[in-house]
Length: 444
Image (cartoon, rainbow, N blue to C red):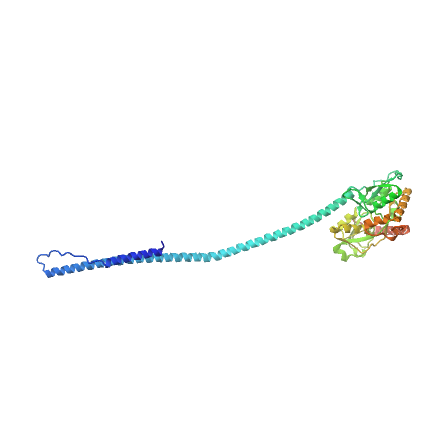
């Protein structure tokens, strides 16, 4: 029951009591026998007075009681109501105050918490995004690194590990020139498109291999190709380790002191290769001053680099692909190498981000090398070369690996490159190398 209902019931009860006291009949007073010697008038007066006093006393008592009850009830009711109101007000005030105090604080706390959560979420999202980006970059870098490593490993496997080198000393007696129909051939199989190892078959193939095979078909012999380190390949040939060397070998007078060369079968030139980002700053050899140049060890490219004025240093690598990979990695500033080989590697390895600048700044000719004491074999090779040029076989091989027709003199019906022109180029190349060897330092 609510306090209001209780108060109503109390007031109803008080009203009943008051009405009961005020509205009841006057009590009846039974007359008593008069005392002797008391007069009737006195007796009547006394009785009246007594009755009046009794009635007045009863009324007064009843009224006083009713008033007292009413006052008590009213006071109790008022106290109860006041207390209830006060309590309610206090409770309401307390609740309001608490709510007013707590609400802003809670709101503020909640806002701070939400802001903190939002900041944490943002931070987490940022961290996640950063981590994802870092992971992506790391993965791209890892993928690139893995590709580079795989390429380097494959190159190393095809060259450094599997390649043969010249014996330490020249044998006291050279083996006789082969008179049979199988010739042992040395080739640096890290020089595409001229020679490289087929990763699927493990066999050495390329322009030079196809050409020498075609010559053998004309002259009745076959070839047994061995992977040889280019830096010692001519020494190995001169020691009798091979019967022939076909390895995109430029004819030079210096090399002709050690081995003999066939008539020229390919015209080449040295080309500058740089990273794409540096292409605008390097156009000619004059722009290589103060730079580190990468080359393949033992090549005419190495000789040409040593002849460039004011280069900082020349760094030599076992193979051309390794030199170009070093350029891509930022280990050197440029690479000087044969044009056809450089262009082939750039075309087939776009991940290196390299580009050739300018055109060839030398003119060179390749020839097939043969031991100096094996003149009969030299004649056989020259004869077969002339035949494959004349019947168009050479042009087919050229188009297969270079994607275009060969120079006019090497097309079907042609007679081949001028031997005198190749000789003049050989002399010029050797002379330049001799001059630069005296003035330039090589940094391995």
